[in-house]
Image (tube, rainbow, N blue to C red; front, side):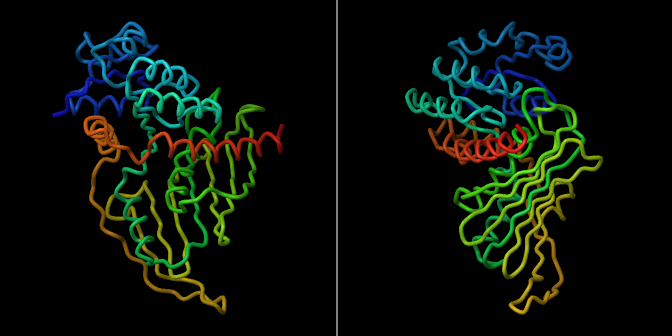
Length: 320
């Protein structure tokens, strides 16, 4: 179906899902992971296993690189891939500093190659329907956005919960607001390290009194992936832990000018059941073949990185 020859670096828990989809499209030619045993237990065709990352990046037979390795390795792999004339798909976060992100943007522009960032929810039918309903004015003026992403998860040593989890929600919030926050406030819990936050609570303040609240937590005993938007005429709740018929709920209840709650029955919005990751990978392949700019391109990623940097600076200022 696609002519692109793809090399992949990294086969962690999420990388395995990317690998599965690349195999579905029959584009994966080489794969490398530091854990060779993991590769040999997963990859059916052993000829696809590379001895090191350079074998993939330097190959003239590889057109594009998919990077699903730890976040601290992203910058170097991206830079090397771009310098070797490769398009890049990189899992979030793009990298761990704004300076590195700007260097990647500059280089990608110079070599005229796509950097596609894995902000997955942009390819989820639930989130896209939520944006469509907002655009139609069904919930009125936006007032509050709430994003909760909680679960027991891998405790990272190099990146905080901010970069690991909150990047998804920041990307979604910026997509809805179409603007950058003017101010941020942050609280954090450092449970396993004095420097790596395990829980963060962030307030993003936008123009027109719009506030976004982010709670990101990888030490939660329960799982919650809930994203809600409250407006003057009602609310939308996107809950990716629910089954497909209940992932997106429209609640037309609202608070009137007399501060009384006007209750109305909520209803589920029908959305098409499609795997977001499969759509994301296919979009990447289509963008390369048609030289098309993706939604989650380097410019979108830079905006996310700018907000991450704002929050990170507040964290350092408050907690040292």
